[in-house]
Length: 168
Image (cartoon, rainbow, N blue to C red; front, side):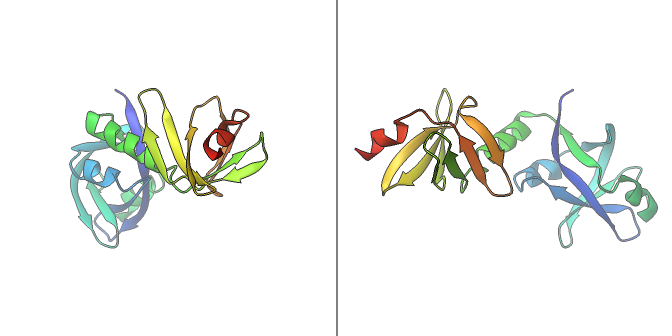
């Protein structure tokens, strides 16, 4: 069974074994709320309840008190891969690029930010504005050299003249 990492467990909440959930993306919330179980440290735990109290909380079978919740604090939270989860994950990964700047090493020029990511049949394409003109940049793995998530900069080696095609 394939699993998908959706977040991690935070601090315990209260004395009854509830744990805070820190999701990698909000789109996983609905999937998690309807899931019958999750994997923690590779083991399945049945979800007894979910609720909100300053964030999403889980009550898991076998996690009866605060001490048990402390034992799993910081552990990765995984779900079995389902079509719904794959859809949420794909949407998450596509939308995550919006706002990133693109640094082209060929021209040593920073472009962007990415305004939209367009999903074409063969690849993802970033829409950016350069000199008030729309420019499409292929987000192909052979062109992406590095991604700095903290600075939100994607370093790319774009083909010579690609940007110029749009500016003429």
